[in-house]
Amino acid sequence: MDAVVRAEATRDARLLSMIAIGTRGDARNLERTLDQLNDKANSHADFRSNR
Image 1: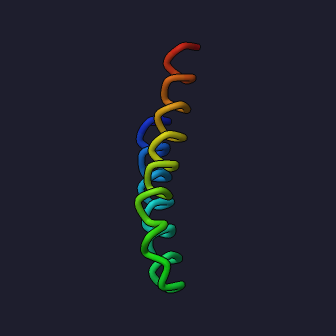
Image 2: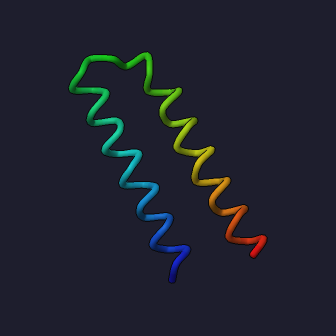
C-alpha cells in the first residue's frame, strides 16, 4: 500500500512541476526538475528497501 501511495505522490509531483514550469515559460528547467524528482524517488525507494 505504501508503495502505491509513494508512486502516486511522485506522479503528482511531476505533473505539478510540469504545470508550474509551463506557466512560467521556463521549459529549459523541465528536464533537470524531472531528473531531480526521479533521483529523490529512487533514493527514497532504496532507503525503504534497505530497512
